Image 1 (cartoon, helix red, strand yellow):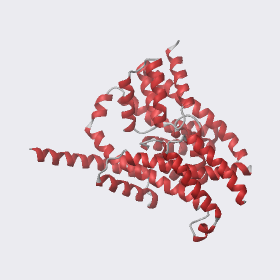
Image 2: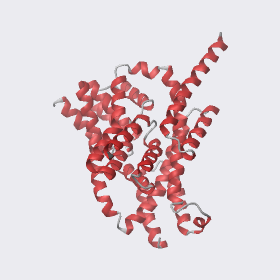
Image 3: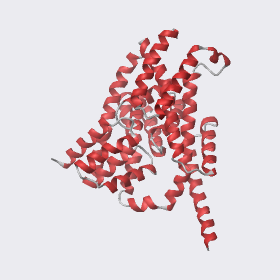
Image 4: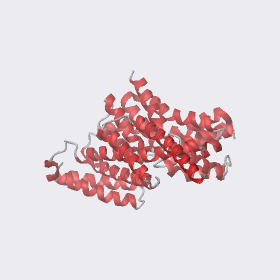
Length: 185
Length: 188
């Protein structure tokens, strides 16, 4: 099969059959890209996961761009990324078109009142998972608190919070390393 | 004009969202509030629908907000905006993957970013909690309504299910059924 066609079909399949996004997509990406198509090996997939943690944006996009680029250069990167986005785009556009009509139905409005409570629970879960994966240090807790207060109460743009905390982390780790190397001398 | 605003807003969100879709809720809300694109309720509904449909949460959310604000061109522009930063960054580091991954500077930046993301998700939690429980303002009267306690109980139950790793779609469906029951039962 034509390589580009193969890329777009494979990534459309990944986009169409993974719910919840993020890490839920890894097993399917792994199965398609490593086992079925042999575009990447297991180590390269785990590298992508690691990289996705430290680059912005959805992990599925990162993986699609990387696999496409490795398999067929820049056009491949474009095609694979388009493939993974397309199913979401089509499905959401359709739902969005009918949603306004459905929302005038009383039962649908009630359903969404219940669903909102569930979304709050899902956010709490995401919060806990993220909290668990953070290093258990006093400085981490301080950054968490500051970031919460700045965004939730002082309404500071989250972008500045992200940039500020990133820079602070960089400086802190540089100072810390210097201390450590002084200590061992 | 709306299209340019949409593109820039989602470009910014795409470039500064670390740690998955939930971290971007606070950012989308800030942008939506600033431009008057969505009500807080609509945003929470979009999160639920994005979780119940396939594909990355971030892409689904971008398509939703774009579609609602600027129709099909809006949906295309917002989706393009959220995808572009990831796409460009991966193309740049695709060649020096290993070096980037082991870089001490990246490690240092991430040690500050990760806890910041926890703070952002906590902020999203607070604002969604406000939308769910205090949509008509925070006052003592809210605590005497049956609706408040029903939805608080529903939140507690769904939180337990979420922590027990029940699939989000099942949790959302269950809460929809309970929502309908409570709505008619209490005559909300």
